Structures are given as structure tokens and as C-alpha cells.
Image (tube, rainbow, N blue to C red):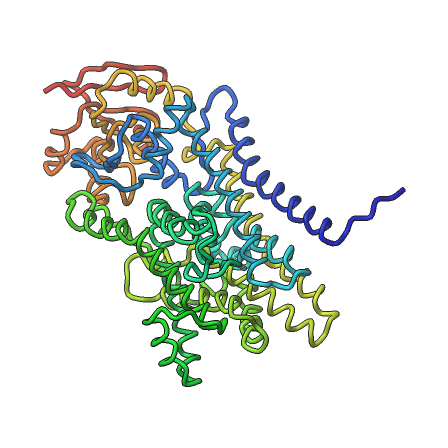
Length: 550
């Protein structure tokens, strides 16, 4: 007898298939890159944004060494450090305790974070009452979709959907563990609860049932502040926007004074809109209580710690131009306009959250602030939710358009991520120097890790300097455009040295260098380098290391 699946069972299988495909497609490219290393190369573990990827690995290495205070690994004289980047420091401690390599810990965490994000996306769309027949479409589009950057690539452009990883779930999960985990926590915090507000919970409920409505929110906010501080700001912005929307409605109806008086006197109100505002106010309080102190600490430490202040001055993330942003969120954002219209006519209060999130984030992206792009975190998800509601609105007018537009939406939204994978994969057969070290380079770094003091400073080319802190924990003169303080000056000094023309202003740098690394990347800068007076302490076919004796 042929088994007939119920509609709910079919939908469950669709969710499972999408999730399995998602995990495979954020894992198999790295497996392929690892296997493609062959016998002459070592894959370093990153295919998307390896510059930041190696900086995360350097942070994990610091935790593996037993540290809880982060010090800039790419800066000479990094100072006393501070309690930031605790997530990656924790992964380092975990790696040491479990006996796993730092890169394996990194990728296992990335996959686990991706699963948490998928669960949060599914729950988000379910609770927000996205039409049930379109929820799998919303889930799949949010998971794999992107913008129309593939069109810009045809004309030589590179729009934000190719590189602003925190906006798109697939790109987030491909890039690092903290973006998908941050998105998961953000979604969980702003997703409306099916439960009643804490003040309305009967006293007969257990301690855990009461506690989870308050302190769990605060703990999630604290963890989000540690992982991705801007996620807390986005959550507070969304909830505050919901409160203002509701209070604006009360003001128009002449009910705001009654609500405020009852709220002040803690009188329970049965009107659902009143309860919803009270829940949102409570959520703002508990989110602020959990994440607020950490945000204030970040603000204080980046202003008072000289090294971190120098890093913060360079760590600028401006938003893309408006045309770039629209193209990077299209075609979903175009249909989202129809979703806003549908929500205005028929939407429930919880569905307004999609519009509030999208509109407020778009506004925040262009305030005069050096880190404005961080407000793009998870932005594609509410855009997709509104786009699906826009489809539903069009289907009400012409039901035959639903499948056609749904298919077109997918077809236009998937190519960018496919192209991104293809472009990244091109560096695998050629063993791109951003992805791979040669065996000799890897062996030299193993020697550095085992035979040099932990606080040693290595002078190496900019490309090699990227890998040394990640592989050995040792400092470098230059290795990262943000985490090397006075990056441009130090990069120029390093290049001058390996071009064989050190200048007078570089003498101060040489006073803090303990070892000089001379490998194929250094020789490619032009040399020859005069190393007379330095003691050679290591060499293999490609690399020689010299000690600076004072």
C-alpha cells in the first residue's frame, strides 16, 4: 500500500531537506578544500574572508593559552588587554579542555550555530503567522537567498550581498560561528512569546516557568552582547519601535492616558493591545539589564585602553550606497513593500515586527556613525517575511500568480550565493595563498610555536603576518588592516624592509622585533634583504628564520 503523507508531514520533510542541504553546503566546500591540499600544502580553514577568519583563530589561540583578557594579536605592545571577544576566548579554553585543534573547534561551533539559526528562523516565521502554505518558501529563501549582486557582477561590480556576511543566513554560516549564533539569539529575543506576560503568570506556575520569562531573556541578551554587541542594540530598537507604534495607536484613540495610569498602578488590563505593550516594555527592561552593562564596558574600554582605542579608530564599517543596498536586498525587498501593505490591511500586531525591524534598520544604516553597517545583522530575514506576505497579498488578487512569483523569487535570489561559492572554489585548485600555506611555511610556524617565547614578535610580510598569530599565538609587526594599530604605517615599514630598503623611521620597530621570518611571500616583495648580523636559527627549503640578538 502506498503511504500518503499528511500536509504537515510533507512540510516537516521540506524543512528537514532544506536544513540538511544547508549544513552540507556550509561544510562540503571546506572538506573539498582540505582534501585538495594534497601533499604539498596545508589548508588553513577559511574560504570566505580569510583575513578576519585568521583573526578569529588568533583569538581562539589566546583562549587556548588560558587567557580571558584579549590582547590585539597583530599589534606590537598590545598592552594589558580587556575582557572582549570572550566568545572566541571561550572556544580556545574549550579546545584545550577537549583536546581538539583550534580550527576544528571553530568549524564544529560554526555548524552548531548554523543549526541553532535554522531553528530560530523556522520558529520566527511560525510565530509571526506567515501563511502556513508559504512558510517553507520563507524558510528556504531566508536560508539560501540573497540579492541581485549576480547581476552587478556581470558588469564588474561587487555589491554587499557578496561580502556583508551578517545580513544573510547562508553567508553568515559560511563565514564564522558568531554571526549565525548572534542571529539565532536575536531572533529568539524578538520573536513574540506565545505565553502571557510575567505579571499575568499565575503564582501556581513553577519557579522555572516564571524565571524563564525574565532572567533567560537577560542571559540571552548578555550572551548576545558578548558574541555580537550590535545584536542587543537591534533587539532594543525593534522592541522600542513596537512600543512606540502601539502607543501611537493608543494616542490616536485617546487611550494612552488610561494605559499609562494603569501601568503606573500595576493594574492588569485585559485588552490584548495593552498586554502586548506591557510585555514589550518588560522585554526592553530585561534585555537592557542583561546586555546593557557589557555594552557600556565595551564603550568604556575602547575609549580608555590606548591599543583598543587605536584599533577602534580603524575599525570602520560604513554602509553601502543606497543603490547597492537596494540591489543587495532585491528582489525580496520589492515584494516586501507589498507585504507592508498587506500587514497594514490585515496583519496582526506580531507581524508588524517585520516592518518595524526592516524600516528601523534601514534608517539606522545611514546615521553618521562609523559602525553603521553592523545594523544590517539579520536584515534579510524580516525582508523575506514581508516579501512572502507580499506574495500572499498578490495571490488574493490573482491566485495563479502565487506559484509563478514564488518560483521567480527563488530563481532570482539564489544565484549570488552560488556564484560566491564558485568564486571561492577557484582559489582551491590554484592553492591561493590566502587559503593555503606550503608545507615548508607550515613547518616553520610549528617551529616558531615550539621554540620561541610566547611574547615573541615576528617580522614577516603582510601575508605571512596574517597567519602567524593564528597558528602560533606570537605577535607580528603587521598582519591585519584593523587589528594592527597604525596599520598603514606598519604595513609600509614591513614592505620596505623586505624590499631591501629600510628607512630611518623603521629603526624603532626593529627594537621590538625578536625574529625575522624570510619565506617565499617575503622574497616576492622584491628584496634582496640584508640579514647580516642576525643569527639564523631555523631553515628549510623555503623558509629561514633569524633571531635578533640585542
